[in-house]
Image 1 (spheres, helix red, strand yellow):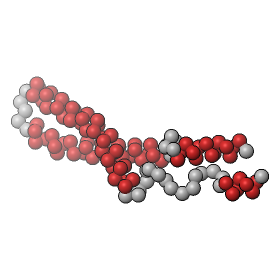
Image 2 (cartoon, one colour; image 1 turned 90 degrees about the vertical axis):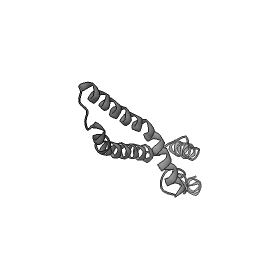
Image 3 (cartoon, one colour; image 1 turned 135 degrees about the vertical axis):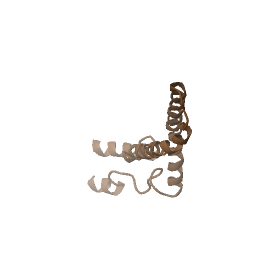
Image 4 (cartoon, one colour; image 1 turned 135 degrees about the horizontal axis):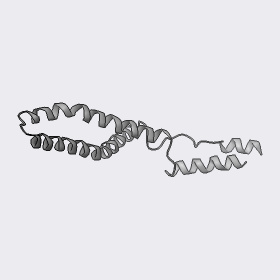
Length: 115
């Protein structure tokens, strides 16, 4: 009886958006990792031509600082990229958002049969 009430509470919290399904943070982390990986892989090709002809330690240091700042900016933009991907996926009906179907836990009919 107490377990049924708890399940009903959890189902309500999920429907109201107060409870996050366990797979949502995992999906967010995977999207973040994929975005960062693609940006890091692209960095050498993006920055190598800009480094040609640097002659002094100061020039190289400024060049590397600019590259590091670019990667950090990419990291800060990753949240927006993830949000946009999730919105597109939700609009296409893939994962995230409303999961549809009946709430988890015993159905009202099953509860009535037990009584």
